[in-house]
Length: 214
Image 1 (cartoon, rainbow, N blue to C red):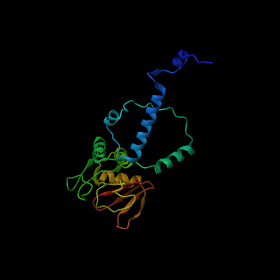
Image 2 (image 1 turned 90 degrees about the vertical axis):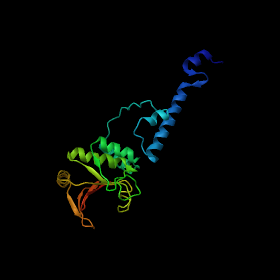
Image 3 (image 1 turned 135 degrees about the horizontal axis):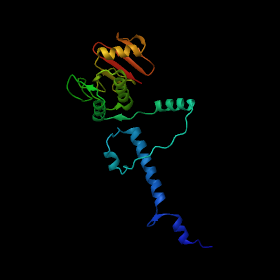
């Protein structure tokens, strides 16, 4: 039996020789792969230029989500904590901090990551930036970044250079907030008293607060 070609063409919308539905599925698949690659390996582009350059300007609509059980939420949070955080370029992080009302100060008036007298935000974690912005919003205190990812800090996995720590200028407001919100832990090996919990640790050094955001 020979199929009716007119019925087949009516069922499959096409343009020329190509199936529109197949092309759309391929385009979305390619876009998803690209976004995952960017999230895992490259600095985030916070502007809209990336989307136009790559033909991804179509906004993705949020999908409706079913209620999540508490056990599922805990598992998701633990999994997300293990995923690599997106890293930001210095200019991107600086713009986010400026828009949120945070300041940045450098003794050398520079932003090079290779100079210890500079205050650089190159390759800082997005989570670190978001949480120091959260500190300002929750405390209502002025926050000035005095140390970032530049060389000259103590090395290690959860270090400045790896994007987990920032130094901020102390003031009465933020010091009072930290000490009232976070319990005293102990004295660090260098003599700095520690306040915090399992996720955030504040060390009161001589001329700044050294903050670890795990």
